[in-house]
Image (cartoon, rainbow, N blue to C red; front, side):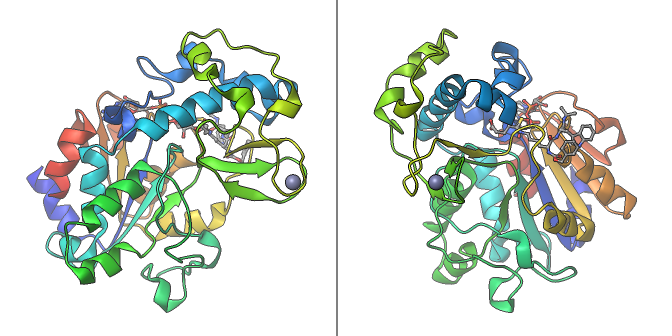
Length: 316
Ligand code: BJW
Ligand code: ZN
């Protein structure tokens, strides 16, 4: 831990690549581990565009259940540690002059806060919106999340200048958002955290919990686009779909000299390749996972244990 803190202190561009394990202590099931969703449900049926085309009713029930679970969850100590560390006044005493970006694969997001809109991020520049590298940094942008919610909570406890800093975007949600709803026909995307999202899905979360989903909710009773009326879909990134703005994420990873890999099995690409990319560029990798995960033998630091215990120690 002391050696890690020494490396942290001299790092200039710090990224965190987070997975489902980050939210595990908040009561949100992971995908592949013990109690993981892909052990109980079929990923190809529920998390691919083909699965949705085949049976949108089934897919919507699964995502309705996920939305309802996420709405009840609260950030845990790992989210809070990351949120605190994202504030430059706090980070300054630990890693002077560094930048910080949380690249999260976690879609269980549910809070208003700024996120990085990747399109205009320049390389080799700190991620400061007033310098023009970040588009869409308006604090009014809606995203929903435990990491953003942690940031909001931390903001309440700090000075006014830090609150300004906390409004600067530091989070990239690379697999989309559970509470975004996308039209299957036009370009319309809307943030929607209604519970339930529509009457047709009300109460079906209990069926999903028991793994007895009703395959036949009529399409007309599923969420519809508020602009054109066509069938809507969850605004997440499914297998086989491209990651929005992947080149800009790549630029952030390319600039990083320290990568913290938190609560991810590191099996889903491109996120699974980010740590290796940082190491190839001469940077360091620290893995925080409750169990062994892919590639952790190559890590410079391996912290085996719950991230809600270890991250506060490592970043405190
Ligand atoms: C704790 C803990 C605690 C528990 N403390 N730890 C290169 C090679 C081969 C294949 C590909 C490739 N490039 C792309 C692909 C195809 C594909 C892919 O990677 N497939 C693999 C299965 C091999 N990737 C894609 O399709 C991606 N698109 C893409 O790359 O486009 C271009 C392209 C397409 C096709 C071919 C080639 C190029 C898109 C991936 C989208 C993933 N979507 C999902 C669902 C999102 C929506 C939703 O939420 O439903 O994203 S799948 C699911 O997996 C979700 C997660 O974000 C993602 C990663 O899972 P994660 O976070 O690692 O969770 P778990 O459960 O696996 O692990 C949890 C970990 O936490 C465990 O290790 C625990 O031990 C740990 N843990 N409690 C610390 N308290
Ligand atoms: Zn539409």
